[in-house]
Image 1 (cartoon, one colour):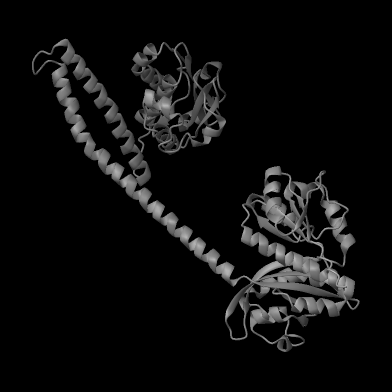
Image 2 (cartoon, one colour; image 1 turned 180 degrees about the vertical axis):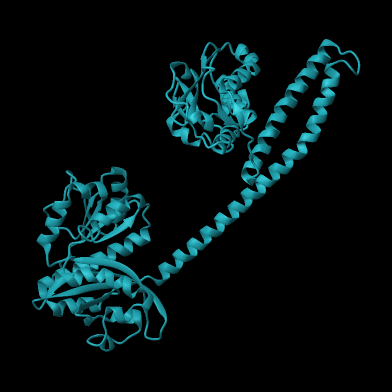
Length: 513
């Protein structure tokens, strides 16, 4: 009677990933090939498994458990694959090869993940078989592997499988007993590889992982990835290594990087051409706009003849539209100068209180139209500043103008200034709509308008705040914002004090607005 063969047990993979959605997606993909186990308590299980995929937060909490479980499995290899972000490099340095055997950065590429799991599981399978059946069975299994494998001690190879020898196009007999790991490494990479191997030789580390450029028998260069760990062989410590030919992957990465650089250069060129076009366009638009405004003034003043009330109203609308268009052109010209590095300021002694008063007077009709209360709390005894009066007035006009646009009727706008060490801090506070925290970082970018529906009603180009930032930074100051949705915003900027004011001693109560 024929008996059905007992199916081989499936490889068991444990997932210790705190983010439940990432854990689920990873499990769905792994379950196509492996038995996946996710402990309910998110701790290293006592049950048998072949691979554990673990993230940084979990590893930090269970470092001792991971190390104890690895020690309990020795001399068999129990792999831990570390999933992390590029920003966690300090965490990676702390734990890589002390508690985990390999890492992969998020977002995860399935091809790369599959390759790393394959290498770790083959090493796991090989070490378990070596522990269970000895070197003879281990050699047979390794010879069937597509991954290179070797044993090394005292700078010489004790064993090399066919797949590994094929990577370097040598015969096994040419390698075993005659060559050592550094002999296959490109001279330029030997010092770096030696540094990786030194802790294993000294016994201060159990395993290591590195990439290097290798030299084939015919002198051709090959890119390799190696994993090594110390095991006991015939009562002596030897290095068990696995090799992977990553030449194709390396070339793809180089090609990808080159393509990305080309895309960046193309985008930068397009950005430059766009700025140049805007600069030329803005300059050319000034002439017809000035003509419209000039002849509009002639009509408004009745020089060309009397106008009917309806005609006069039409002229006023035309003049208002021309003013808005001129402001847009001026913003575009300023941004063009900033991008081209031709933006300059002309500092002179400046009293901030006088500039604020002048801007408030200019904006008074808008404040009255919006039924807003405006307050200025700036002492006339505030220390003098060295600044471009026109440009700082432009900053204040923009910030106060924005507060007027986005503050409902009956609201308050307050301008305050005070000295802080070697600079003056100016704040424009309103009781307006406020800004979401997620949007604060985008405010000072070019052409940024957060609420398009609101912006269409009140007008704006999305350039004002980026120009303000350039002006303030050109003075050596800083600019920023604090805001709470539905409660209002506080835009602030700093300007350095004039040199004569730096030695003025302690502040008097009247110096603070």
